[in-house]
Length: 358
Image (cartoon, rainbow, N blue to C red):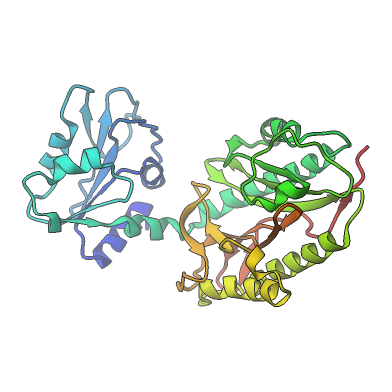
């Protein structure tokens, strides 16, 4: 079954016969056609009769061999009028959550509001179950990230700044076969690690600091994401305590993964370990997020998500403890739900490592 077939099946289950997909990443997922439209409209109309339609500005190239019907338009033409010509007016139109209001509103003119529904889940849930090809690409991206982590560790030395290390990472990824960042790298020393989304600055490394790397690359279009936390030259009692606690939470949640287990139970497993040790208020984010063609895709691993794990899902497991003004630890792996359990895509050690860079 093709990816479009899978999306169409999901639409059928929602009772929808047509859907306008405007997220360029989702169009790429279904067609292999990559377009970055900027402010211009770009979309694909999925139709029950199989006569799917791509709406493309003349500025963007589409390979001749693409089998879908293509409707071209220029900047001065009313593209949404063209879309209307291919939409079955008597049927409900599903749209995705990425469709901008300036494109949706012209479509709605002359039609009842009830004739439009948010059909995003038809694509989002389909993308959440990776096929075999996607799984292989996710493995490959994580291999590059494992190798890059070791190189980053080698850059840690006395007097280095967070920004100096972060600035070296893209070159490392390119040397290892990566293509780009999947997100801006997080490099945090000492108290900066208490900010889960700290951006690298000119903070200088000091003895006793934790060194947190949350990094990811793109390879063949797919994203990797991993966090490891090290200590520089010496390990304080507090850093050792929270490190081992976070590692235990990470490993316990991973051990629980198999088809049928509610995702909220994974979050609860990790969170209970941290809470029972007295640090619950310092684990201030969900346990994980889905990932694939985008670094954050629909779906998460949180107390609010009761959906059961299914084979083909790939998501992060990343518990953390953040002590404001003092220190922070996060350990993150990507995991693939298999037919009977779980495969961890990252293989970089989670043993507490002390770096003695000179």
